[in-house]
Length: 511
Length: 110
Image (cartoon, rainbow over all chains, first blue to last red; front, side):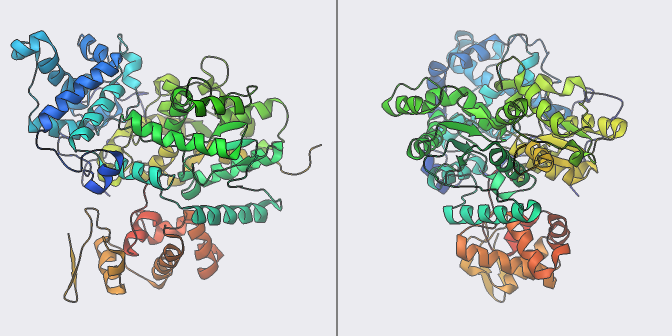
């Protein structure tokens, strides 16, 4: 199946033990470099510029001035070692450069050389390095072996966030003309067409009409999936994978049934047909803002009162943590359009709201009729997606981002089991495909990085008969569909949370 | 890495997808299938031909659900599911079948 070794699972342990080190084991793994056609639409140089060292150092200086956190993270590491065994990529590859501290040091060493007194005059004493071609190669390799999942930062006594360092490194690489094909090609499609797939409006409409037929055939009820409906109450912003892939599309059908049964008018937008925002993965605030502004424009044009976000992990981070200043959803933007949107949106609802929050509220109010027995053939566990778990919240209580999805699942499934505590909630292990790594050219790191999650899953499959793992992230769903078979587990055991809702919801007139 | 066939040389990208969609013909599809270790049967051709028809109309590959439904109509309802498509194209119907059909690689969180 693969020309590399698939890591072995040890069902005795909740968390894999620290492996024997294999230095530079993954040094050869690099994603495809973006072509000029992928770079230039984002405003990045088409290929490596001649004076790239200088451009890189200047960019680093710019970022240090812009993001105080970056400098704090680069300055404050004391090499205590708490992070070393917390990264799924380290545990799965044995490569010490995949220890979070070592990954940070790839950038930190160059930072010290150019931005600290000791590094300028006594580089060898403080581990400072010049930015050579070999160092750039190392950056390109190992900053694309980080899914920006932030598990290491939970354990760091100083709270150093490796994700932010990896975002900065990618931003510097884009600035010198060495971007990653997967992310940058996709961002080009978002800015041109409106979604990661490059799905144009006629194809979107055709796909949604097909789904309406399917639901009618399954249930006998006319459930709509509307597009570009002016005056709808809710604008649903969901990952475009929900239109395309499985099991994502079963989740989309679930959202439609929830809106239908609750009597909420809603619409998708063909202009803003993507929740995902890879601008965050590449650390580019400008690109992230451009993608987010499409959503604001759609919301203003359609005149909606609420914005709801579908099952997408990093999208919920962008929406929850950044939309306020990027777009004025919530509060924060101080430009005229941002203010216009703040006036337009209904203050009685969270803006934005996660689809799990919406469904959970409806369940509390008794607005949905649910038949748990429809999921009796399932024993379900929940995979916390990293961006939701460690960068956002749901509801109005701390930990709502853990409780609300579980509550929704348990409202529609009788059999639910959590995986080991060190592998869920804020300690969750990444699926292995996040942060811009969900591409075929990085399959080896994706398979190896999935190992800690697979081990925890293996335990509940063996001990509790779990046969379904539910998730609220498009990347997690696609990644698991791909890697589960490498660990001899069925591809179809990964499910959308709203797929479980979809199967249990009873459509029709309310009592 | 160009594909050489019938004295013709056809450009592909670093992942083996055709650069120029107009270069595609059935012989090239056969070569692409060989490189994927897929042995083309009539059912494979049904999928490939449907992908090309859909792409001509919509400029994008169909969603997996659209594809399974179309194949169910053509080959019988018991074959209209993604499990069957994975039997035909083990690396995944979206990417592997698109490659053989000469279409661009689908991108995104898929």
